[in-house]
Image 1: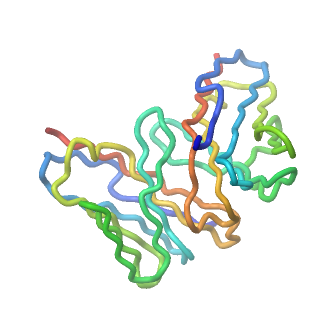
Image 2: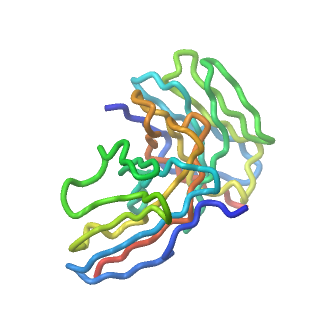
Length: 111
Length: 115
């Protein structure tokens, strides 16, 4: 069974600080995605990474896919209160019939 | 250009009743996925359907749960004889192709409460 572990589970930081969230697995994924979920809503896709070592930037967010395609990180620069939410990593499973999700990192940014 | 539509948003059922959750995928998307989310947890895969076919139901409990995606109309997740443990948020997602390599579009979910 492919599993994705995220760390930390919870993170509360001051506005303006930087942070990194990690997503790790012992399995190789053909692609990996990051989603953000706000209370009472469904997850919203932020990015998909496909190639080992790939780095993608989305404004203040930087996403990296590990060389071996087993792990990924999300780095946020100068966090803002609007970044608050549940961040989920997800990978296409070996059968390629579905994506599986990590347990999430709940991020809180204090003004 | 409506996204994935789920209804109802909130559903309250007494133990032993049936719950029916509906999902209309994005226009042009023929692949539908159902996930369940418990409070403070990630999403757990339940079932993957294409029009009139169940492709992968490995995450679906063997009893009381069923899903369909008819040729016409929305996908339905049906839970018979609900129990308190079924209380959760149920999310539907759709994609234009199999595998999810390019990500899914999720609905806003149905929050089921069993009393």
